[in-house]
Amino acid sequence: MSFAVAILLVAGQAALPAVEAGYDEISDARYADAIRTIEADPDFGNPAQLINLALAYARQGDEETARRLLRTALAREPVMLEASDGKWHDSRWMAWQALADLGPDDSSRVRTASR
Image 1 (cartoon, helix red, strand yellow):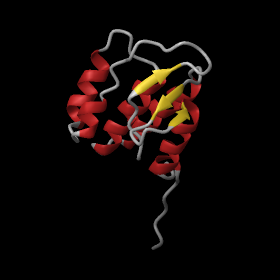
Image 2 (cartoon, rainbow, N blue to C red):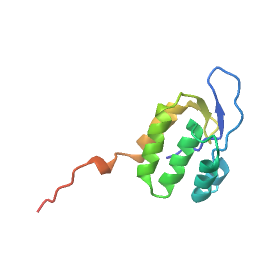
Image 3 (cartoon, helix red, strand yellow):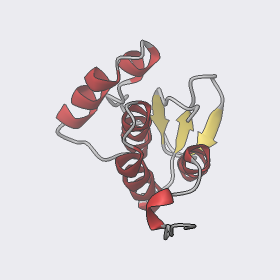
Image 4 (cartoon, helix red, strand yellow):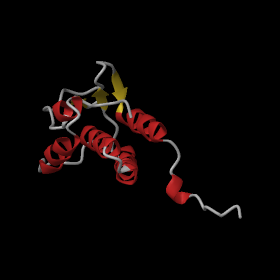
């Protein structure tokens, strides 16, 4: 996953207050701190937080939780988000990209023995 979200704006509307999306912690590779910071926000649940939380969980090896969070972000009203590279993207696009970065969900595949 290549995105870390810093700022949240509603497309075509006035800026919303900045939200705690764990950007600094993720930038410093402090993923457990990012998880605690994001989940501690009493207003937790906007796409920026969900995507960054998914990133932190994925970097810690919990891809199942990351996928669940990204699917939740996809269900939210889309907003424009600034990525760590300074480019702005639709939150749903970012969530889809992050899911693609994770690759196929192996938990849904049936495995059989060859011998």
